[in-house]
Length: 276
View 1: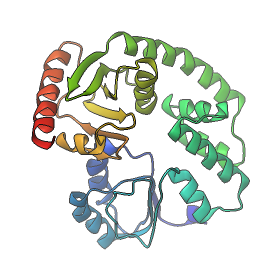
View 2: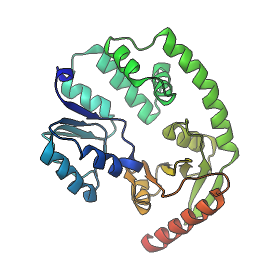
View 3: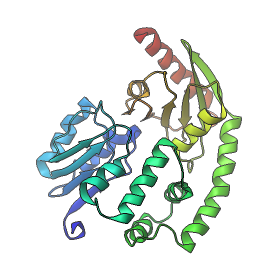
View 4: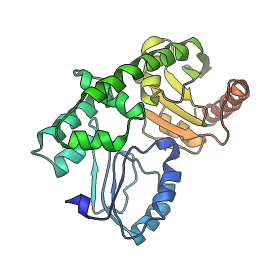
């Protein structure tokens, strides 16, 4: 039904660039807006109000219980579940493909992976495969195709090389009694997977911090460690307590990485001195 209506689906949002993405959406007019898996900071509400004046925010969901409440007709908020599950139960409760995708999304979000399809689909998206092709195929109830398998196999080799390089260049810094592991990641590497690789592969690191050449900085933490959403706000970003991010003002290269780490280090030291 929605394909016949002027809908704007704002999915695949990144916490490190959410404000910029909301500003882009605010330029839209006479659209039906569906916001998926986006946590709202209070300072973002004026932008969202602008969106709501010129459009209708039909649906918004988040898995962050600390999220501010946006002016949406339907707002779903839940803990320890994925946005895909919230959306599936709301709109497609009897659809088998939607239910399968929601379960796979939940597995990948919380790394309780029981089906390799979750990893394959995540890799397929990250590989740069045509998203319209992915959506069209999934809408027909097919979770894979020979073309998907070929793309996945090629990306797997590329991803493994990037993960190996990631682990070779970790810089560890300590704030109070928490150890942060910093590293520069390849552009095509999924931030959640890169962070999880650090946490799984380095028992001494409490918070994984992954940097990208375009200036993105992503945080992911273990239990009983600082709220990384609050830390991301130091750099103008946000997210959820366990996973958050921001966008630095300059690009990051191997040459300016030491200087970038020094600036981040100083900002984190000031934060911990002021708050703990």
